[in-house]
Length: 621
Picture 1 (cartoon, rainbow, N blue to C red):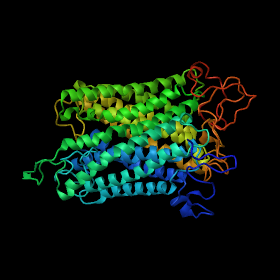
Picture 2: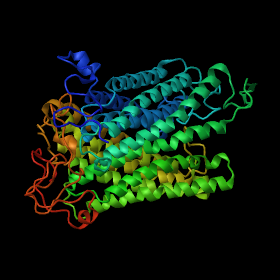
Picture 3: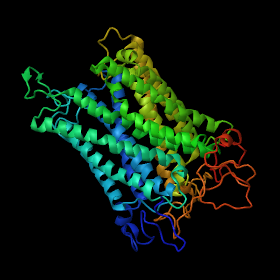
């Protein structure tokens, strides 16, 4: 059932909002505070999420470069000692995974795109949506405060393993670990508030004709990731509460009897292994909480910029659902070296390899969508293609680590660092950049500068390969991760130290390259070329709004009606290159492709079309 469609008399079905003009608590003129600060408009909230996530992500980027200063030039910077190094590692990992990527994909892209793509006026619960952002901001503030408390932030590693996270000798064990745990608990509350909105809006607020199998794959990816978050975050929440009690009240959920610095601690009977199971039951779905929205976004980018129907739409949807289910039965592959029954390890190695099947289906379908397409190498398309290559390489290294016998010697080396960053760091960030370049005209009404965008892409893409590709070699050499310095280990050859210096220089270049992106964002808000209503000539519903950027309520007085799927491109015999979702059928028009027409997508697509209009000077054709 669709939940927010207009009836013939102009009324709406029971759905997100009863009628335009009085929904969401925005009657009459708005002040600056109600429009931009305490706004209940999903688009403003999405921009708030994105700006906050990017800001905190810059903190994570600075921390990573401080780590690279030490690793590339050990002992040259006196302000980086061992305690600070481990604090940088911990905060960098947690910031990038949770506070940047998760918040940006769900709170940023999800908030902005879901209502527009399904034809709704706003989220189903606008006030709850607004509240979710401010709770998220509170979580970020609490996390940042930990930099300024006695002892600094926690240095227990981003996985926060006990007993190390609580032992007195660990950096930040006084207030840092407490603030980290409190911040995580607050973040989970915010994610739950937002998640309920995303799922409910996609299921109950779709406009007339917007069936589930007419939703863009971006919506499918974000909704499935949200379901994973709603199911996986409780495990992290419970483990966080239990560790907080271990730290503050000296309970023993995770703390065994232990002696620290010659003194027995007041703990007994706890199980650190229990925490690992709880953490990774959240931790591996978290990979797909980030990856599934990226899968959906890159599908839309490729289809639009290759002027080609997405190949295997239904198969892509089923692959998203299969990945979501399988993501909950692979968590223990992170714990092969923790000690487990060999049959248990075999089970999780098997499920780990099985989950590669639906993932490979998506990769094949992306390639088949590109096949014989009229590919426009726009900046969003460059980032989309860069994502595919990066994700494939990172995924292939995951096949090694999914095998117990191979994982054992590689698990604590830089091979894992390289794999994790290729799959969980670089690949999703390429999609983030591609999505921002693609939808920036919708958000601002102006286009980002293409020349700066191309420089940004090549510096980021080539630079990240220069950073993480050599790390696989370091891992095979046996260079252990998490170490502050490597000068006193005879088994590490001199070439590894030279390579570490080279990696650090590449990291600094990539970090400087992001300044181009930030400048482009800020400059184009006022000086970018006007984009018009649909600069990419996309068929999906978010580009069919009467105004760009969309006004409050998105659709004016009448909601759109959906007549087809969102990937109708290169229609044979048609005068235009695409058919919008909300364009009513014309009996005089030639027959168009059926929803999900794979055969036509493979053999009939790719008819030459003019490049996107209004492309700024210097854009790639």
